[in-house]
Image (cartoon, rainbow, N blue to C red; front, side):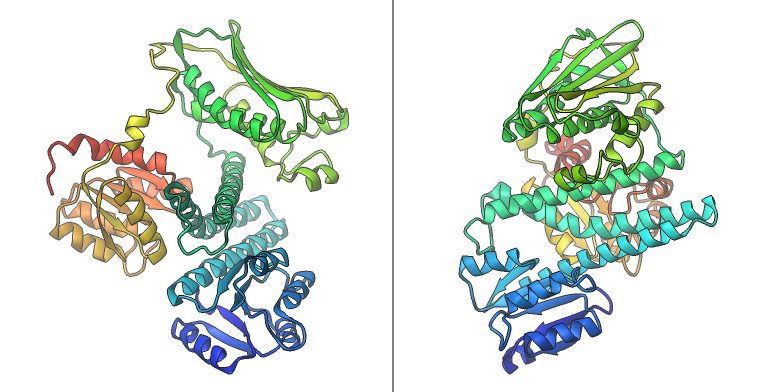
Length: 527
Protein backbone atom coordinates (compact mmCIF):
# COMPACT_ATOMS: atom_id res chain seq x y z
CA UNK A 1 0.00 0.00 0.00
CA UNK A 2 1.28 3.49 -0.84
CA UNK A 3 2.14 5.40 2.34
CA UNK A 4 -0.03 8.41 3.23
CA UNK A 5 -2.18 8.03 0.11
CA UNK A 6 -5.42 10.04 0.16
CA UNK A 7 -8.59 8.97 -1.65
CA UNK A 8 -11.70 11.07 -2.33
CA UNK A 9 -14.93 9.04 -2.23
CA UNK A 10 -17.78 10.63 -4.19
CA UNK A 11 -21.13 8.91 -3.52
CA UNK A 12 -24.48 10.16 -2.23
CA UNK A 13 -25.44 6.83 -0.63
CA UNK A 14 -24.55 6.82 3.12
CA UNK A 15 -24.27 3.02 3.21
CA UNK A 16 -21.81 2.95 0.31
CA UNK A 17 -19.71 5.70 1.86
CA UNK A 18 -19.58 3.93 5.21
CA UNK A 19 -18.63 0.56 3.70
CA UNK A 20 -15.94 1.91 1.39
CA UNK A 21 -14.51 4.18 4.06
CA UNK A 22 -14.17 1.30 6.50
CA UNK A 23 -12.37 -1.09 4.12
CA UNK A 24 -10.05 1.62 2.78
CA UNK A 25 -9.11 2.93 6.21
CA UNK A 26 -8.35 -0.65 7.27
CA UNK A 27 -5.78 -0.69 4.43
CA UNK A 28 -4.21 2.51 5.78
CA UNK A 29 -5.59 5.04 3.29
CA UNK A 30 -6.66 8.54 4.32
CA UNK A 31 -10.26 9.14 3.18
CA UNK A 32 -12.21 12.28 2.24
CA UNK A 33 -15.84 12.13 1.16
CA UNK A 34 -18.17 14.18 -1.04
CA UNK A 35 -21.88 13.57 -1.60
CA UNK A 36 -22.29 15.45 -4.89
CA UNK A 37 -20.27 16.64 -7.86
CA UNK A 38 -19.90 20.29 -6.84
CA UNK A 39 -18.71 19.26 -3.40
CA UNK A 40 -16.16 16.90 -4.99
CA UNK A 41 -14.73 19.55 -7.32
CA UNK A 42 -14.45 22.11 -4.52
CA UNK A 43 -12.69 19.56 -2.32
CA UNK A 44 -10.17 18.67 -5.05
CA UNK A 45 -9.40 22.29 -5.90
CA UNK A 46 -8.84 23.05 -2.23
CA UNK A 47 -6.56 20.07 -1.62
CA UNK A 48 -5.73 17.46 -4.30
CA UNK A 49 -5.72 13.70 -3.56
CA UNK A 50 -4.01 10.60 -4.98
CA UNK A 51 -7.17 8.99 -6.41
CA UNK A 52 -10.88 9.71 -6.89
CA UNK A 53 -13.43 6.89 -6.47
CA UNK A 54 -16.38 8.34 -8.34
CA UNK A 55 -20.01 7.19 -8.53
CA UNK A 56 -21.97 8.20 -11.64
CA UNK A 57 -25.53 8.74 -10.37
CA UNK A 58 -25.11 11.87 -8.25
CA UNK A 59 -27.41 14.80 -7.45
CA UNK A 60 -26.73 17.85 -9.62
CA UNK A 61 -23.98 17.07 -12.10
CA UNK A 62 -23.36 13.38 -12.66
CA UNK A 63 -20.04 11.53 -12.36
CA UNK A 64 -19.26 11.79 -16.08
CA UNK A 65 -19.47 15.60 -15.92
CA UNK A 66 -17.41 15.66 -12.73
CA UNK A 67 -14.67 13.68 -14.46
CA UNK A 68 -14.76 16.06 -17.45
CA UNK A 69 -14.35 19.04 -15.08
CA UNK A 70 -11.40 17.35 -13.36
CA UNK A 71 -9.64 16.64 -16.65
CA UNK A 72 -10.23 20.22 -17.86
CA UNK A 73 -8.62 21.78 -14.76
CA UNK A 74 -4.80 22.08 -15.18
CA UNK A 75 -4.31 21.98 -11.41
CA UNK A 76 -5.99 18.60 -10.88
CA UNK A 77 -6.23 16.98 -14.34
CA UNK A 78 -3.56 14.36 -13.56
CA UNK A 79 -5.45 12.89 -10.59
CA UNK A 80 -6.67 9.38 -11.58
CA UNK A 81 -10.44 8.85 -11.58
CA UNK A 82 -11.76 5.32 -10.98
CA UNK A 83 -15.48 4.96 -11.67
CA UNK A 84 -17.33 2.64 -9.27
CA UNK A 85 -20.98 2.37 -10.23
CA UNK A 86 -24.01 0.12 -10.44
CA UNK A 87 -24.28 1.05 -14.13
CA UNK A 88 -22.74 -1.95 -15.88
CA UNK A 89 -23.81 -1.47 -19.51
CA UNK A 90 -20.84 -1.44 -21.93
CA UNK A 91 -21.80 2.02 -23.23
CA UNK A 92 -21.52 3.44 -19.69
CA UNK A 93 -18.07 1.89 -19.29
CA UNK A 94 -16.94 3.20 -22.66
CA UNK A 95 -18.19 6.69 -21.77
CA UNK A 96 -16.29 6.48 -18.48
CA UNK A 97 -13.03 5.93 -20.37
CA UNK A 98 -13.90 8.57 -22.98
CA UNK A 99 -14.30 11.31 -20.36
CA UNK A 100 -10.93 10.48 -18.80
CA UNK A 101 -11.44 7.69 -16.27
CA UNK A 102 -8.51 5.31 -15.77
CA UNK A 103 -10.67 2.36 -14.70
CA UNK A 104 -14.29 1.25 -14.21
CA UNK A 105 -15.59 -1.14 -11.55
CA UNK A 106 -19.20 -2.36 -11.49
CA UNK A 107 -21.19 -2.78 -8.27
CA UNK A 108 -21.39 -5.17 -6.55
CA UNK A 109 -17.62 -5.55 -6.59
CA UNK A 110 -15.05 -7.99 -5.24
CA UNK A 111 -13.03 -6.30 -2.50
CA UNK A 112 -9.58 -7.71 -3.41
CA UNK A 113 -10.00 -6.75 -7.06
CA UNK A 114 -10.87 -3.15 -6.16
CA UNK A 115 -7.93 -2.91 -3.73
CA UNK A 116 -5.51 -4.19 -6.36
CA UNK A 117 -6.76 -1.68 -8.94
CA UNK A 118 -6.62 1.18 -6.45
CA UNK A 119 -3.05 0.29 -5.47
CA UNK A 120 -1.89 0.02 -9.10
CA UNK A 121 -3.37 3.38 -10.14
CA UNK A 122 -1.96 5.17 -7.09
CA UNK A 123 1.48 3.73 -7.86
CA UNK A 124 1.26 4.91 -11.47
CA UNK A 125 0.10 8.38 -10.31
CA UNK A 126 2.93 8.58 -7.79
CA UNK A 127 5.40 7.53 -10.52
CA UNK A 128 4.17 10.38 -12.73
CA UNK A 129 4.63 12.79 -9.84
CA UNK A 130 8.16 11.49 -9.28
CA UNK A 131 8.91 12.01 -12.96
CA UNK A 132 7.56 15.58 -12.99
CA UNK A 133 9.25 16.56 -9.74
CA UNK A 134 12.56 15.00 -10.77
CA UNK A 135 12.43 16.79 -14.12
CA UNK A 136 11.98 20.13 -12.30
CA UNK A 137 14.90 19.28 -10.05
CA UNK A 138 17.11 18.33 -13.00
CA UNK A 139 16.27 21.55 -14.87
CA UNK A 140 16.88 23.69 -11.80
CA UNK A 141 20.22 22.09 -10.97
CA UNK A 142 22.27 24.34 -13.29
CA UNK A 143 24.71 25.66 -10.69
CA UNK A 144 27.34 23.13 -11.72
CA UNK A 145 27.63 20.16 -14.05
CA UNK A 146 28.34 17.88 -11.11
CA UNK A 147 25.17 18.87 -9.28
CA UNK A 148 23.11 18.53 -12.47
CA UNK A 149 24.43 15.04 -13.21
CA UNK A 150 23.86 13.88 -9.64
CA UNK A 151 20.25 15.12 -9.68
CA UNK A 152 19.65 13.48 -13.07
CA UNK A 153 21.11 10.14 -11.93
CA UNK A 154 18.95 10.14 -8.80
CA UNK A 155 15.92 11.04 -10.88
CA UNK A 156 16.58 8.24 -13.36
CA UNK A 157 17.13 5.58 -10.68
CA UNK A 158 13.95 6.62 -8.84
CA UNK A 159 11.87 6.87 -12.01
CA UNK A 160 13.08 3.50 -13.25
CA UNK A 161 12.07 1.68 -10.07
CA UNK A 162 8.76 3.50 -9.60
CA UNK A 163 7.65 2.93 -13.20
CA UNK A 164 8.95 -0.62 -13.65
CA UNK A 165 7.22 -2.03 -10.54
CA UNK A 166 3.60 -1.35 -11.59
CA UNK A 167 4.48 -2.01 -15.23
CA UNK A 168 5.65 -5.50 -14.29
CA UNK A 169 2.14 -6.30 -13.07
CA UNK A 170 0.37 -4.56 -15.95
CA UNK A 171 2.41 -6.10 -18.78
CA UNK A 172 2.79 -9.54 -17.20
CA UNK A 173 -0.88 -10.04 -16.39
CA UNK A 174 -1.92 -8.71 -19.78
CA UNK A 175 0.39 -11.22 -21.49
CA UNK A 176 -1.00 -14.08 -19.41
CA UNK A 177 -4.60 -13.15 -20.21
CA UNK A 178 -3.84 -12.77 -23.92
CA UNK A 179 -1.97 -16.10 -24.00
CA UNK A 180 -4.79 -17.93 -22.22
CA UNK A 181 -7.51 -16.38 -24.34
CA UNK A 182 -9.44 -15.46 -21.20
CA UNK A 183 -10.24 -11.99 -19.94
CA UNK A 184 -10.80 -13.08 -16.34
CA UNK A 185 -12.82 -10.54 -14.41
CA UNK A 186 -12.83 -8.01 -17.23
CA UNK A 187 -16.50 -7.31 -18.02
CA UNK A 188 -16.29 -5.43 -21.31
CA UNK A 189 -17.11 -7.25 -24.54
CA UNK A 190 -13.93 -6.09 -26.28
CA UNK A 191 -11.72 -7.07 -23.35
CA UNK A 192 -9.04 -8.74 -25.49
CA UNK A 193 -8.51 -5.55 -27.50
CA UNK A 194 -8.28 -3.51 -24.30
CA UNK A 195 -5.78 -5.93 -22.79
CA UNK A 196 -3.68 -5.78 -25.95
CA UNK A 197 -3.76 -1.98 -25.80
CA UNK A 198 -2.60 -2.09 -22.18
CA UNK A 199 0.23 -4.41 -23.17
CA UNK A 200 1.36 -2.20 -26.07
CA UNK A 201 1.15 0.97 -23.93
CA UNK A 202 3.18 -0.65 -21.19
CA UNK A 203 5.85 -1.80 -23.64
CA UNK A 204 5.98 1.71 -25.10
CA UNK A 205 6.43 3.26 -21.68
CA UNK A 206 9.15 0.75 -20.86
CA UNK A 207 10.97 1.63 -24.10
CA UNK A 208 10.95 5.29 -23.01
CA UNK A 209 12.46 4.37 -19.65
CA UNK A 210 15.17 2.35 -21.38
CA UNK A 211 15.94 5.27 -23.72
CA UNK A 212 16.35 7.64 -20.79
CA UNK A 213 18.60 5.19 -18.96
CA UNK A 214 20.71 4.69 -22.09
CA UNK A 215 21.01 8.47 -22.52
CA UNK A 216 22.16 8.88 -18.93
CA UNK A 217 24.84 6.19 -19.28
CA UNK A 218 26.04 7.65 -22.59
CA UNK A 219 26.37 11.17 -21.18
CA UNK A 220 28.12 9.86 -18.06
CA UNK A 221 30.60 7.91 -20.18
CA UNK A 222 29.51 4.64 -18.56
CA UNK A 223 27.95 2.94 -21.59
CA UNK A 224 29.65 -0.34 -22.43
CA UNK A 225 29.87 -1.80 -25.95
CA UNK A 226 30.29 -5.58 -26.07
CA UNK A 227 32.49 -7.14 -28.72
CA UNK A 228 31.74 -10.73 -29.72
CA UNK A 229 31.09 -12.71 -32.91
CA UNK A 230 27.44 -12.70 -34.01
CA UNK A 231 25.41 -14.10 -36.86
CA UNK A 232 24.22 -11.23 -39.05
CA UNK A 233 21.56 -13.39 -40.77
CA UNK A 234 19.92 -14.19 -37.44
CA UNK A 235 19.90 -10.51 -36.43
CA UNK A 236 18.30 -9.51 -39.74
CA UNK A 237 15.68 -12.25 -39.39
CA UNK A 238 14.72 -10.97 -35.94
CA UNK A 239 14.41 -7.41 -37.27
CA UNK A 240 12.34 -8.64 -40.22
CA UNK A 241 9.94 -10.50 -37.93
CA UNK A 242 9.35 -7.32 -35.92
CA UNK A 243 8.72 -4.96 -38.83
CA UNK A 244 6.97 -7.19 -41.34
CA UNK A 245 3.98 -7.31 -38.98
CA UNK A 246 4.19 -3.64 -38.00
CA UNK A 247 4.45 -2.53 -41.66
CA UNK A 248 1.58 -4.77 -42.76
CA UNK A 249 -0.64 -3.33 -40.02
CA UNK A 250 0.23 0.17 -41.32
CA UNK A 251 -0.55 -0.79 -44.92
CA UNK A 252 3.09 -0.52 -46.02
CA UNK A 253 5.44 -2.82 -47.90
CA UNK A 254 8.57 -3.97 -46.08
CA UNK A 255 11.65 -5.62 -47.55
CA UNK A 256 14.99 -6.85 -46.23
CA UNK A 257 17.71 -7.30 -48.86
CA UNK A 258 20.80 -9.07 -47.50
CA UNK A 259 23.63 -8.71 -50.02
CA UNK A 260 26.42 -9.26 -47.48
CA UNK A 261 26.82 -12.94 -48.38
CA UNK A 262 28.67 -13.68 -45.15
CA UNK A 263 30.01 -17.16 -44.46
CA UNK A 264 31.54 -16.16 -41.12
CA UNK A 265 30.10 -14.44 -38.13
CA UNK A 266 31.23 -10.84 -37.63
CA UNK A 267 32.66 -9.07 -34.61
CA UNK A 268 30.54 -6.43 -32.91
CA UNK A 269 27.75 -5.78 -30.41
CA UNK A 270 24.70 -7.46 -31.97
CA UNK A 271 22.34 -6.04 -29.33
CA UNK A 272 23.38 -2.45 -30.06
CA UNK A 273 23.44 -2.93 -33.83
CA UNK A 274 19.91 -4.30 -33.54
CA UNK A 275 18.89 -1.37 -31.31
CA UNK A 276 20.06 1.15 -33.94
CA UNK A 277 18.35 -0.71 -36.79
CA UNK A 278 15.09 -1.01 -34.85
CA UNK A 279 15.16 2.70 -34.11
CA UNK A 280 15.86 3.70 -37.72
CA UNK A 281 13.25 1.31 -39.10
CA UNK A 282 10.74 2.32 -36.43
CA UNK A 283 11.08 5.97 -37.44
CA UNK A 284 10.73 5.12 -41.13
CA UNK A 285 7.55 3.12 -40.54
CA UNK A 286 6.14 5.83 -38.24
CA UNK A 287 6.78 8.66 -40.72
CA UNK A 288 5.64 6.77 -43.84
CA UNK A 289 1.93 6.81 -44.65
CA UNK A 290 2.03 5.09 -48.03
CA UNK A 291 4.57 3.15 -50.05
CA UNK A 292 7.10 1.20 -48.03
CA UNK A 293 10.38 0.75 -46.20
CA UNK A 294 13.44 -1.20 -47.34
CA UNK A 295 16.48 -2.38 -45.35
CA UNK A 296 19.53 -3.26 -47.45
CA UNK A 297 22.78 -4.76 -46.13
CA UNK A 298 26.16 -5.14 -47.82
CA UNK A 299 29.85 -4.67 -47.05
CA UNK A 300 33.12 -3.46 -48.54
CA UNK A 301 36.64 -4.03 -47.25
CA UNK A 302 36.25 -1.52 -44.42
CA UNK A 303 32.59 -1.32 -43.43
CA UNK A 304 29.44 -3.33 -42.90
CA UNK A 305 26.68 -1.10 -44.29
CA UNK A 306 22.95 -0.93 -43.49
CA UNK A 307 20.68 1.30 -45.57
CA UNK A 308 17.11 2.16 -44.51
CA UNK A 309 15.09 3.77 -47.31
CA UNK A 310 11.48 4.96 -46.93
CA UNK A 311 8.85 6.82 -48.98
CA UNK A 312 7.78 8.92 -46.00
CA UNK A 313 7.28 12.63 -45.31
CA UNK A 314 10.97 13.51 -45.67
CA UNK A 315 12.83 16.38 -43.99
CA UNK A 316 14.19 19.81 -44.83
CA UNK A 317 17.89 20.73 -44.67
CA UNK A 318 17.20 22.79 -41.55
CA UNK A 319 15.76 19.75 -39.79
CA UNK A 320 18.63 17.52 -40.92
CA UNK A 321 21.06 19.91 -39.23
CA UNK A 322 19.68 19.17 -35.76
CA UNK A 323 18.30 15.68 -36.30
CA UNK A 324 20.67 13.83 -33.97
CA UNK A 325 20.47 16.22 -31.03
CA UNK A 326 18.72 14.84 -27.88
CA UNK A 327 15.02 15.64 -27.39
CA UNK A 328 14.79 17.07 -30.94
CA UNK A 329 12.16 16.40 -33.57
CA UNK A 330 11.35 18.08 -36.85
CA UNK A 331 8.89 20.63 -35.42
CA UNK A 332 5.95 20.90 -33.04
CA UNK A 333 3.43 19.81 -35.66
CA UNK A 334 5.42 16.59 -36.19
CA UNK A 335 5.49 15.97 -32.44
CA UNK A 336 1.73 16.49 -32.16
CA UNK A 337 1.06 14.29 -35.18
CA UNK A 338 3.45 11.41 -34.61
CA UNK A 339 4.54 11.66 -30.95
CA UNK A 340 7.94 10.61 -29.63
CA UNK A 341 10.63 12.09 -27.40
CA UNK A 342 13.46 12.79 -29.82
CA UNK A 343 15.83 10.51 -27.89
CA UNK A 344 16.03 7.60 -30.31
CA UNK A 345 18.12 9.14 -33.10
CA UNK A 346 20.53 10.79 -30.66
CA UNK A 347 21.06 7.46 -28.88
CA UNK A 348 21.49 5.66 -32.22
CA UNK A 349 24.03 8.23 -33.42
CA UNK A 350 25.92 7.92 -30.11
CA UNK A 351 25.91 4.11 -30.30
CA UNK A 352 27.22 4.20 -33.87
CA UNK A 353 30.09 6.45 -32.76
CA UNK A 354 30.93 4.16 -29.83
CA UNK A 355 31.06 1.24 -32.29
CA UNK A 356 33.55 3.30 -34.41
CA UNK A 357 30.86 3.81 -37.03
CA UNK A 358 28.64 6.57 -38.37
CA UNK A 359 25.05 7.31 -39.39
CA UNK A 360 24.49 9.40 -42.50
CA UNK A 361 21.15 10.71 -43.71
CA UNK A 362 19.73 12.25 -46.86
CA UNK A 363 16.14 13.36 -47.30
CA UNK A 364 13.72 15.30 -49.45
CA UNK A 365 10.44 16.68 -48.17
CA UNK A 366 7.45 14.78 -49.51
CA UNK A 367 9.65 12.13 -51.13
CA UNK A 368 11.33 10.16 -48.35
CA UNK A 369 14.52 9.61 -46.39
CA UNK A 370 17.58 7.37 -46.47
CA UNK A 371 19.59 6.51 -43.36
CA UNK A 372 22.89 4.62 -43.67
CA UNK A 373 24.58 2.96 -40.70
CA UNK A 374 28.27 2.05 -41.20
CA UNK A 375 30.22 -0.04 -38.69
CA UNK A 376 33.65 -1.64 -39.10
CA UNK A 377 33.58 -4.92 -41.02
CA UNK A 378 35.52 -7.52 -39.03
CA UNK A 379 34.84 -11.13 -39.99
CA UNK A 380 35.55 -13.73 -37.30
CA UNK A 381 36.93 -17.24 -37.55
CA UNK A 382 33.53 -18.72 -36.61
CA UNK A 383 31.42 -19.98 -39.52
CA UNK A 384 27.76 -19.16 -39.88
CA UNK A 385 25.57 -21.87 -38.33
CA UNK A 386 23.53 -23.99 -40.72
CA UNK A 387 20.33 -23.07 -38.86
CA UNK A 388 20.93 -19.33 -39.17
CA UNK A 389 17.46 -18.81 -40.58
CA UNK A 390 15.84 -20.21 -37.44
CA UNK A 391 15.60 -17.45 -34.86
CA UNK A 392 13.51 -19.27 -32.31
CA UNK A 393 13.06 -22.97 -31.70
CA UNK A 394 9.32 -23.55 -30.99
CA UNK A 395 10.10 -26.84 -29.27
CA UNK A 396 12.30 -25.02 -26.76
CA UNK A 397 9.65 -22.36 -26.10
CA UNK A 398 6.98 -24.98 -25.35
CA UNK A 399 9.21 -27.35 -23.41
CA UNK A 400 8.20 -27.84 -19.79
CA UNK A 401 10.85 -27.26 -17.16
CA UNK A 402 11.30 -29.26 -13.97
CA UNK A 403 12.59 -27.90 -10.70
CA UNK A 404 11.80 -26.15 -7.42
CA UNK A 405 12.27 -22.37 -7.46
CA UNK A 406 12.25 -19.97 -4.49
CA UNK A 407 10.85 -16.49 -5.31
CA UNK A 408 11.74 -13.67 -2.87
CA UNK A 409 9.27 -10.85 -3.59
CA UNK A 410 7.53 -8.50 -1.14
CA UNK A 411 4.73 -7.21 -3.39
CA UNK A 412 1.80 -9.63 -3.34
CA UNK A 413 0.58 -8.89 -6.88
CA UNK A 414 4.05 -9.56 -8.28
CA UNK A 415 4.32 -12.76 -6.23
CA UNK A 416 1.14 -13.99 -7.93
CA UNK A 417 2.38 -12.96 -11.36
CA UNK A 418 5.79 -14.60 -10.98
CA UNK A 419 4.22 -17.79 -9.59
CA UNK A 420 1.81 -17.99 -12.52
CA UNK A 421 4.59 -17.53 -15.08
CA UNK A 422 6.88 -20.11 -13.45
CA UNK A 423 4.14 -22.66 -12.77
CA UNK A 424 2.99 -22.36 -16.40
CA UNK A 425 6.51 -23.45 -17.35
CA UNK A 426 6.12 -26.58 -15.20
CA UNK A 427 8.04 -25.44 -12.11
CA UNK A 428 7.26 -25.81 -8.40
CA UNK A 429 7.36 -22.43 -6.68
CA UNK A 430 7.81 -21.36 -3.04
CA UNK A 431 7.53 -17.67 -2.12
CA UNK A 432 9.23 -15.53 0.51
CA UNK A 433 7.95 -12.08 1.52
CA UNK A 434 11.39 -10.67 2.35
CA UNK A 435 15.08 -11.54 2.42
CA UNK A 436 14.98 -12.96 5.94
CA UNK A 437 12.29 -15.48 4.98
CA UNK A 438 14.27 -16.34 1.83
CA UNK A 439 17.40 -17.10 3.86
CA UNK A 440 15.44 -19.30 6.29
CA UNK A 441 13.67 -21.22 3.51
CA UNK A 442 16.86 -21.69 1.48
CA UNK A 443 18.64 -22.96 4.59
CA UNK A 444 15.95 -25.50 5.50
CA UNK A 445 15.00 -26.69 2.00
CA UNK A 446 16.67 -27.57 -1.29
CA UNK A 447 15.94 -25.38 -4.30
CA UNK A 448 17.37 -25.55 -7.81
CA UNK A 449 17.19 -21.76 -8.20
CA UNK A 450 16.38 -18.58 -6.25
CA UNK A 451 14.87 -15.45 -7.85
CA UNK A 452 15.73 -12.53 -5.56
CA UNK A 453 14.20 -9.03 -5.49
CA UNK A 454 16.46 -6.19 -4.34
CA UNK A 455 14.26 -3.84 -2.31
CA UNK A 456 12.35 -5.75 0.38
CA UNK A 457 11.39 -5.05 4.02
CA UNK A 458 13.18 -6.65 6.99
CA UNK A 459 16.10 -7.77 4.80
CA UNK A 460 16.83 -6.74 1.21
CA UNK A 461 18.03 -8.96 -1.62
CA UNK A 462 21.68 -7.91 -1.40
CA UNK A 463 21.90 -8.70 2.30
CA UNK A 464 20.04 -12.00 1.86
CA UNK A 465 22.31 -13.12 -0.99
CA UNK A 466 25.40 -12.21 1.00
CA UNK A 467 24.09 -14.12 4.04
CA UNK A 468 23.44 -17.26 1.97
CA UNK A 469 26.87 -17.18 0.37
CA UNK A 470 28.62 -16.63 3.73
CA UNK A 471 26.72 -19.64 5.11
CA UNK A 472 28.05 -21.79 2.28
CA UNK A 473 24.78 -22.02 0.32
CA UNK A 474 25.68 -22.35 -3.38
CA UNK A 475 22.14 -22.46 -4.83
CA UNK A 476 22.13 -20.33 -8.02
CA UNK A 477 20.65 -16.89 -7.28
CA UNK A 478 19.26 -14.66 -10.03
CA UNK A 479 18.41 -11.05 -9.23
CA UNK A 480 14.89 -10.21 -10.46
CA UNK A 481 14.43 -6.54 -9.67
CA UNK A 482 13.21 -3.14 -10.88
CA UNK A 483 16.55 -1.64 -9.77
CA UNK A 484 18.32 -1.93 -13.13
CA UNK A 485 21.07 0.68 -13.09
CA UNK A 486 24.61 -0.62 -13.67
CA UNK A 487 25.53 0.06 -10.05
CA UNK A 488 22.74 -2.30 -8.94
CA UNK A 489 23.99 -5.03 -11.28
CA UNK A 490 27.51 -4.58 -9.88
CA UNK A 491 26.24 -4.79 -6.29
CA UNK A 492 24.45 -8.08 -6.93
CA UNK A 493 27.51 -9.50 -8.68
CA UNK A 494 29.75 -8.51 -5.76
CA UNK A 495 27.64 -10.40 -3.18
CA UNK A 496 27.56 -13.60 -5.23
CA UNK A 497 24.59 -13.47 -7.62
CA UNK A 498 24.77 -15.71 -10.68
CA UNK A 499 22.68 -13.54 -12.99
CA UNK A 500 20.49 -10.46 -13.34
CA UNK A 501 16.99 -9.96 -14.79
CA UNK A 502 15.20 -6.62 -14.84
CA UNK A 503 11.52 -5.86 -14.37
CA UNK A 504 9.17 -5.81 -16.21
CA UNK A 505 9.74 -9.50 -16.84
CA UNK A 506 10.81 -10.57 -20.33
CA UNK A 507 9.45 -14.13 -20.48
CA UNK A 508 11.83 -15.23 -23.23
CA UNK A 509 14.85 -13.93 -21.31
CA UNK A 510 13.53 -15.52 -18.10
CA UNK A 511 13.10 -18.89 -19.83
CA UNK A 512 16.62 -18.64 -21.23
CA UNK A 513 18.05 -18.08 -17.75
CA UNK A 514 15.95 -20.84 -16.21
CA UNK A 515 17.11 -23.23 -18.91
CA UNK A 516 20.72 -22.86 -17.81
CA UNK A 517 19.92 -24.26 -14.39
CA UNK A 518 16.79 -26.38 -14.79
CA UNK A 519 16.36 -27.97 -18.24
CA UNK A 520 19.44 -30.16 -17.98
CA UNK A 521 18.26 -31.39 -14.57
CA UNK A 522 14.79 -32.51 -15.58
CA UNK A 523 16.00 -36.08 -16.21
CA UNK A 524 17.60 -36.30 -12.75
CA UNK A 525 15.40 -34.36 -10.35
CA UNK A 526 12.27 -35.99 -8.95
CA UNK A 527 9.48 -34.44 -6.87
